View 1: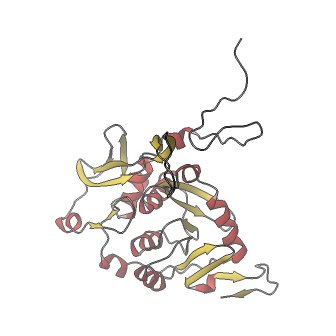
View 2: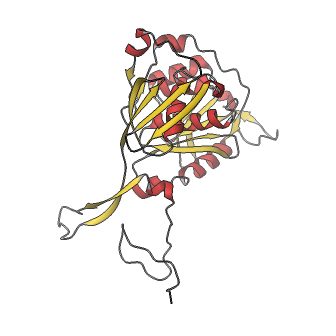
View 3: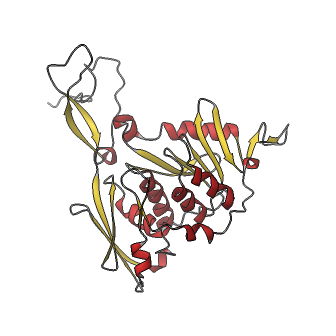
Length: 302
């Protein structure tokens, strides 16, 4: 007769005792991590035996558009279809879902092939202006200063209260099982003022944002007047990705860069950083941040 109950192996920590909380990691999480041995060392001692810990996986993935190799990204091996489509969409190489003929994901070889219904003309200027960004996971972009100069300013009148920002931050912080297991991954989300609508994660902060936009692109999820939440720095190329989607607010628990702040100011995007412990720093277009009751009782803006 089979035994009944929940059976678990400890990969991090000590002995499981009655009453302990056990978190079940889903298939997506387990596909993103690998169990590796580690030796614990302090100033006073060294453990005699190795402990097993979960380490986030890293995979080089090459994006091929119409049989032309565009870029190889270092990324987490999950939702590679969203990553490839989000990257192509963000770089202006895809404009509508109707253009896509097929998407082939070869996880074993680390290749995503995208075929469009019409051929794409690639100029040498486009290919050779590829820039290695400041992103984790060696982010790459076809971004140039001219892209920012030609970008339409975000004119949205959307706003959000301080309480809503803090509530989203709390939900965002507890959303990633991979981060809790490894502390080695970035997260990104598309939100409205009340809920997280689309969530994804990757070792690279650019990749996490592209995965979110790739899912939106393929599932026809509108991004206008929404909010992007990210765990990473807000740099100029991240800000431009957001502005291209007509998103008026970007929020991070981390810091921005000077060029990120300048671009947010020029493109009409509200940039909020350091959302921690009931506080936040508003760098640009603070009129979208409501202090007090949004219903009109003592409504003020910063």
